[in-house]
Amino acid sequence: MLTKAPRGTKDVLPSKVYKWAYVEKMFSEICEKFGYKEIRTPVFEHTELFKRSVGETTDIVQKEMYTFSDNGGRDITLKPEGTAPVVRAFVENKIYADAQPTKLFYITPCFRYERPQAGRLRAFHQFGVEVFGAKNPSVDAEVISVAMTFFKKLGLENLELKINSIGCPKCRQKYSEALREFLKQKLDKLCNTCSDRYERNPMRIIDCKKEECQEEIKDAPLILDYICDECREHFNKLQKYLDLMELEYEIDPRIVRGLDYYNRTAFEIISREIGSQATVCGGGRYDGLVEEVGGPETPGVGFGLGIERLLLTLENNNINIPEPKGIDVFIVTMGDRAYERAIEISQKLRMNMVAVDIDHMGRSTKAQFKFSNKLNSLYTIVIGDNELDNNVVSLKNMETGNQDEIALDSIVDEIVNRVEVL
Ligand code: ATP
Ligand code: MG
Image (tube, rainbow, N blue to C red; front, side, top):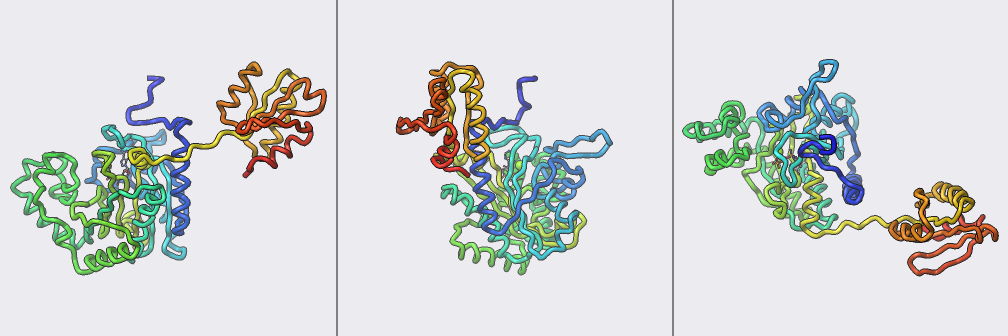
């Protein structure tokens, strides 16, 4: 127990963490180019927030949440997704009173009790964006473009963008009736969860992952055939803007998304190579959500993008993320006097933002050189009694093998001149 992490969780070890840092930096930079600002919200929220916003009939709320009561008796849930907390923060902090739209991005851990598989964890991470306050389909296109530009800048060219319109509550009502009519004779063949959804939210059945349900809904009516003129107009404009941005897409009328508050635009970005967990990014418009959480009527649109699935996709496409370079300097010392000088010099170098290390293990001189190599250092400073008697140190360029003698009191300046410091 003690030495085994809970099922569905994964450590990011130091040897891999540079990949995370790289995609996080790239995502932040792209978002900033599009005018999005970062927001950070707590890891847990009141359970009620997710029930209300994600929806009572969704897989997330019905089966997947990490919910507990805290010592004060509050009903708390670890965030299963990033949108609801951002909506809560938007309302609580009255961000709606600022000039709109509000364009936000986040990087967050998420928690869902699911069956762990490759690309499906219980503790995972998402990038996301949310835009509040704009109805215009240009925002839907922009949000999609943030994700597509991010993928392209990472070198991922062969992802498929699928879009759909799931209409507004008005269209949904007509559609739900048609779907109920279609499913009427098949009710006993659906899974338990879906029989329950039949009355409450039949469109959710389209999204069920169970084979038995997928089989029954093969020829079901499609929401896209039921959308009203305004929703149609919105969808047409979205397509026009995507064309103008030269983003390729496919219309897939089966995309309905897993959250209840989506309306109009729904989209997914799919990577064929990662098998059944192929959806790397999913999002859409959620015009009723801010109001549902207690804020003023405010349109919204956004996406969530799984970081673990993104990294799998990069691996499967053989896209290499540049490995971090080694340290700038390692100081090899011989004897106590030299070691004390090394402690002084290393501190001064670090104050100058030079990456420097010294031996902490009492290694032999030979072993210190070996360790310096292992750390991939650009330079090695060597200090021994001989050098100290002459007030010099020796400075070795590890790439060329060239060695210079430098006066002890100018070694810091010399290194600062030679290496690129921040
Ligand atoms: P799926 O259909 O694969 O269950 P979802 O519709 O539940 O996905 P969203 O709620 O839209 O997923 O979350 C957005 C993204 O977060 C997904 O496209 C995926 O990349 C990632 N994601 C979702 N659940 C997990 C998980 N359990 N482990 C790892 N990544 C996940
Ligand atoms: Mg899911």
